[in-house]
Length: 495
Image (cartoon, rainbow, N blue to C red; front, side, top):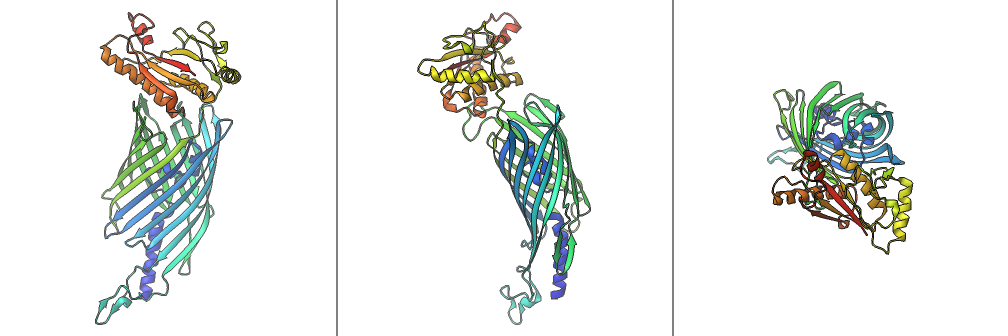
């Protein structure tokens, strides 16, 4: 009986380990990129620490539990991202009492280049150490049946070993080509990776097993983006232990604004992730993204084509990431006064470098340094100037377009380099609608700019907001064009 048990354990292990050793088994794999393609870690501006937990449940109380912890950090030179490094820990346990275990630690580096004017290419290299173990302490054998007593779990099971462990190093590599959006998110990506390049060998019961190559390919394309909504179909393929696995799905994203944000919850996005794995089942997940963290939860439904030997019941997955963007807008120029931006009359200027309406002047990076010195030199005097910007708000709209963000980024640079300065943001509307409704809209416009400044690192204590409704029009509200110009935001920067 002992010999039969050992053989059955060995067969079970070889079967199960093919399902848990480095396989792409997480639905929300943005946090598990080293498990998909080591080159991906250089494609994000976020320094992040993420954790994923997944429980795949079968009948007969058999479970496969996977826990994954990953740290990744982008690398910059002169504010240009050229690569990234990552570190991960994986733990997979399966069986009715977790008799089979695969644990590993991984380190990776990716180097990125600007392939064309509109696309980037990253090459990643990864080294890992994986350990596999069989634990028989929870197995029952005939040796534990005692005459006159029956089954005694405290009795030894008669086996000569309690656990077997083997481990080895492995090397992997990957390529990741992608096209970024204007906001530095990814519009299109195509990746390919090969794992187990060194073909590590594992030995149990005197028999040696060679880990075969594992191929992974993934792609995604943002087919739709309008306003706050976008759709990105995705496909993931991997060949592991000579089995083909294909997952097709999509990510549906919606950007939302929170007017009265706080340290825990502010403007961000929510993703709906849908996947179908051929011959496995359907998985659905929801992920909420905030500037400093993201949280997701998903569930998988097995279909009629699931494992014929151990039918699958379902999958539960939880994901949590803490992150911080390391990208800083390049300080190429700070627009302080320009005919396209400043429509109102400036007031209380302290020094001419900041310009006037007639100057139509653009302050370059070197001049910003001179301005910073002048501000420090004049810090005992009152500093106040007004900038007015028509962000082309739509009617009843308080959403920032790309042009608005570029302009506000220049103000971020000015505030970041001069920490003694504060800002008051004043929202305005046209005269269409009731005064009460216009008041709310003007306040919303000021708040959305405030939230954007906070996201870019400006302390909330330096920001004030106010809504003026339609009380201070720059132009007569007699044409569509003039009403559009009155739907604006005014900035008062002061010491």
